[in-house]
Length: 416
Image (cartoon, rainbow, N blue to C red):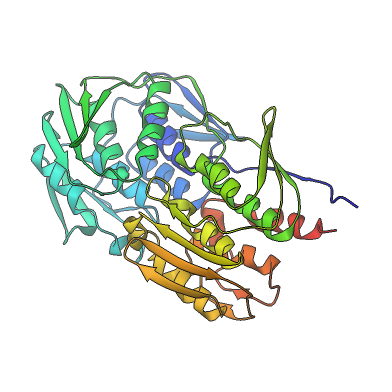
């Protein structure tokens, strides 16, 4: 008897929500941001904006922003929680202010590097103080238009922070990103959300990297912006469905979305899965997974934990490469997954930029998520293969996927 398909609505995009909140707060007209992600990271961005004078009101599944003349500095350190996106995007914005502002966060956030962004801000006449590039960051402007460069393989969040700040300052600017450029699809998310608010810049690709030409003195304005569904989050029920052998239909995604993590469709096809679009619904009909060989996650590092989980339960050798930035996320995600898989009896070898996984049977063990939402969810989907696995850190998944546990239970209960 064929197992009926489980129908789920994916969470909204975390990346899109951060950017929509920021530009909504700066909009010159009242702005409604519809269907934001209500995770801790996005709440951190909203809280920091409100501390800087943004006028925001939650109305049902929306946040409505009223125009303000400008963000205002505050002497109170601003808590970004565990959100690197909040810290970096807001670093660019407070650099436009004439008084110093301090941005900080939890222990994990204070361990993450930011020096290339701080160097770029200083090259544009801001002053900064930090703990060797780590938070707390104290930044004082005003930021000036000019030409600035970022080195190879740095976080795309640095570039997004500069783009969203420089288009607001007087004068035109140029941003160079040296090749190879990491996590490039996130720059397209920034461009698309900015375009919804009427902001623009041009980008030119050369053998040396990317060159952005950024007109200054722009003013964001949008009355209604809807946040797209999250491809990063969608990867978890898709992999869970493969492991459980349960068909799923996901609502809320767009096949033409600029989010790079939509590549999960093609990657899962390489794992032997059948995925088709049924109008606006993505349908997966699970098959026994097969190893795809080598997977380059350079453009899509957020897919790493859940795809490693799938590889752990897939016979054969799978190599994940191209994403050294995984060492500096909410945890060292390469080490975190390697440690957990070893405890589960799966052979794996760390690489500087990824992990080699030799899939096979899993054994019961207690494994640590390090309270990293993507590590937690990746390890939890493995309980569909080995129910005796215990994962600590429940609750941290709410950062990006508040309904994850309910959706996982629905998939588990749907087994034939």
